[in-house]
Length: 263
Image 1 (cartoon, rainbow, N blue to C red):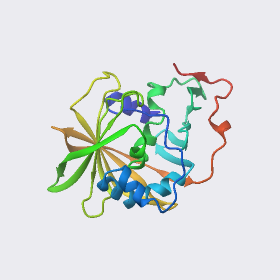
Image 2: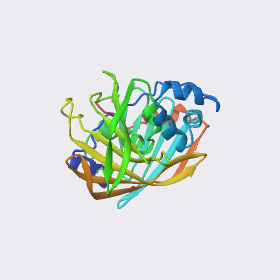
Image 3: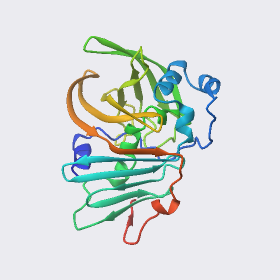
Image 4: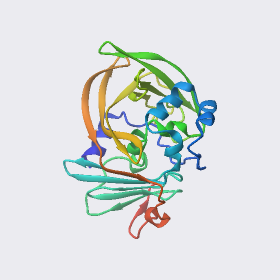
């Protein structure tokens, strides 16, 4: 549970945990023209650099494990419905498509807001592909310069009513030569529900290829000053990553006996 405590103590990971994916159709491999007309050209190239949006849309189940000092945390997500299951050392957190539920394995209390934590790491891990969901608007962002290197940016905003925090904004910064995602910047509006001008940063530094898709091996959270990343504060590692076209049974995400619905 130290991972959850870390997120809540710094009060910076309260971004929109959008539980429902409205993109449910399977797209053929030859959909490059569709991608180009639906998304900005630079974002289409970012998708392609990570294995392609069409391949991502063919996948049904994503699973990854995060090692922590007090044990491991394993997340399983149905990529079409966004149902999820997070198995932690002391708790199991799930989303059945309608409600978030929490099961305690012992007497240790869940530290933080389970509804907030649900699907949190999934969104960080699944960049840039989750930025192809419906209800999203794209525009050009000012480039970001870090250590004398400049990264072009794409600004992401959301329609009203999308997710828990539709006022959130994201800035995706990519390598201008490879089009791989390098920096993710985002605002925090979970508590205030108001627009913010303060951005926080995650760096995508190491990648792993899984079933043809380029997915994070590590993420680095950075402290920022004047909306520029400065000091690295924590590294998140992802192991035992799998993504497949095989659908996980819905029963996997159903509330078990003894679990409580999170209000």
